[in-house]
Image (tube, rainbow, N blue to C red; front, side):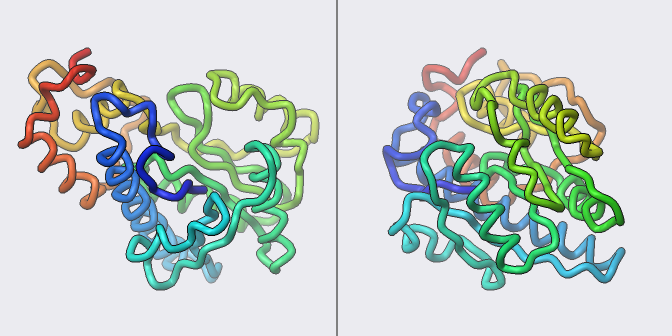
Length: 249
């Protein structure tokens, strides 16, 4: 699930310390790295089973397809998001894919460039197994990075206080209402403000920021290398990003 990476329309909570143009460029890097992590997950699944997995980007708004030119692997397709609000858009994307013949659908954000491919592969593998279940990878802020379905359980997206710390817990409540098994994956994090940007830099560069120590991790998993994001941040740090307002905790 990705918004078109256009200056002023994405990652506004990263402004400052970034400019709107920088935030959009960083978002492009995130999309490229998340797609690369998905490709790595597809390879893991293919090595362990005969499941066929396709990578897609569900984009918004309609008409902004060209903004993804050069960002996606050749094997990835674009699908438009439809609806008002996140609940409708999640339901409609999943419904479109089920109707297209997919046996399961995993939806994830485009804000976690270092999410390990093993988390993504684990979600897909859990959905391949017989029996109905929902796969979910929580986020440290109380939301989730990924949710996977085998059937159109739309209640899982309803009455959720999106963009709050209650999202993950409320989603588990919906699963309990449905009586559907939940397969939890390891928790990760998304990057949507200065604090999480500092965390990303700490993860990718260690003590490159003298005032920022790598945060304690909820998992022992090693993050995806995110080479495109790392390269962009390396240039930004060399240009003084670490000294901008908001970059010290």
